[in-house]
Image (cartoon, rainbow over all chains, first blue to last red; front, top):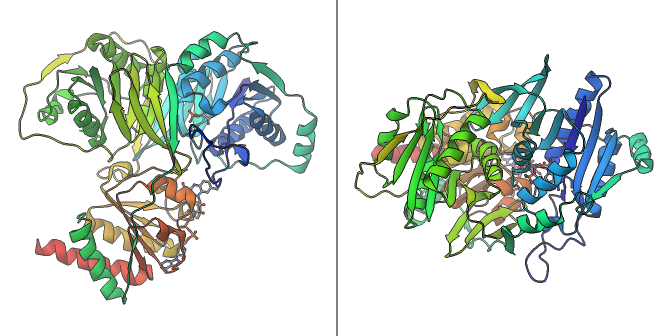
Length: 262
Length: 319
Ligand SMILES: Cc1cc2nc3c(=O)[nH]c(=O)nc-3n(C[C@H](O)[C@H](O)[C@H](O)COP(=O)(O)OP(=O)(O)OC[C@H]3O[C@@H](n4cnc5c(N)ncnc54)[C@H](O)[C@@H]3O)c2cc1C
Ligand SMILES: Nc1ncnc2c1ncn2[C@@H]1O[C@H](COP(=O)(O)O)[C@@H](O)[C@H]1O
């Protein structure tokens, strides 16, 4: 079986967000990039399937600049077999549709039975690329999964977590899955893994080698990130003092009369 | 401008967030069509009589969700109604379906939209990014776009009038879907879905033990609120993940969010900082949550919460 895992390099969630000079994106010089947290579940699931099915290979694939390469080293350190870096400039400007087209073309160079993604790339939080991949590759999808069982005859049963319920989805491989928190407990890379990953080769593709330059220019024209804004400071907070009885009385009054939410 | 609103149904009810999208569309001076997919849909259409809709399309007799089946119905109606804009509520279902359909039309989708301006030749769309530490404003220039709107952000307005909307039953020959839902296990409170609740009471590690969530549930009951939680208590196994608010949980935007014994980590704030009114109850005056609170109560949850429940109950009983 062949499995691909799509991993995205995202700013560490603790990062202080600083805008670039024309306020069209974030300043990335000082930013530490990490594997998007949901992609860790995707990697772990791929490794678990590999462990249970001999002859399985796992390929990690990431589109981005240098930070994508670092993230692929992390995937290799966790135990994936191969890594493919699609090198592009300014990946932060790419819409999910653009990203999806680039990833789909790269994935179509091989034939994968399973493509695992995170349910969202943390930071931009689009939650779109997995469904876009399924559409472009014309294969099955099951998103937000918390459990995956592979069955005979290339079928699967997945449990997805949605608002207020869990759904059991049954379908056929090949398929794209997006991982929700709860799917598994991601392992950390071992020291040995980290050392071995340094020596492994990372295959590189780019828009020219994928013959996508024109297509991507056209797709990028459909949507433009006009500006990023920092949130306005919250209107000054009110500190409610007194003993608990007084605090509760004052709070209820404010919620009724001032905020008008009760 | 032709706007198609995809109306989502869950537990045989139209989702409130779908009606918010519908309200928004109707205010835009556009031709508004609506699409419902499911079963026994004729029972639901009376709920739409307060909205002036050009045409209501029904894809009936579909028992369970399947991406391919739903996608065929949406695609069909986009063609029939010549849509320029497709609106849906930002839910798991939409995030499964909308990008899938949009891509088939080579169109752009933006999820979790909190602001939308329809300009003569483009759309200006705002969504929060980087744990709500920033907002991104996108300009969309394609001839067809798809947006999912964050629940509770766009208001639901109806006039007193009722309308005789035209209803059209679709007759589609569906292909065998590649995947489909074969069973649904209801887990949460079906009456009050967290992401759509107008009031949320959330608990964190300050509650000390899982059984103390009963105290928060009492407050929820008198307020008609939904219960939420921080990741710390979810990870500790006190409460299940579907209650988690934050970056790796739900994004919520209620009228009132009451954070009890929650420190206010950036990842928690990412899920709730767009709430209209935030009350923080924490015994540590330096807790970061207070920087984001509308009303700060420095105090012990075990002293404040039961009194608050009693006070609000008294208030409700008097009305
Ligand atoms: C990648 C990533 C994703 C994450 N995603 C999320 C997420 O989605 N949601 C989320 O919530 N967190 C998330 N976190 C975790 C987050 O960083 C915090 O660890 C978590 O929110 C802390 O939960 P807490 O506030 O309940 O606990 P603590 O930080 O331990 O705070 C407990 C608070 O209770 C107060 N307290 C104690 N006793 C009392 C009392 N008797 N009365 C009143 N107050 C009291 C304390 O003063 C303290 O402020 C994520 C972290 C990472 C790294
Ligand atoms: N640039 C990228 N490179 C590789 N995978 C990506 C990239 N962007 C998104 N993905 C995958 O798609 C998932 C969802 O991302 P998004 O749709 O951007 O929220 C991520 O968790 C990744 O698995």
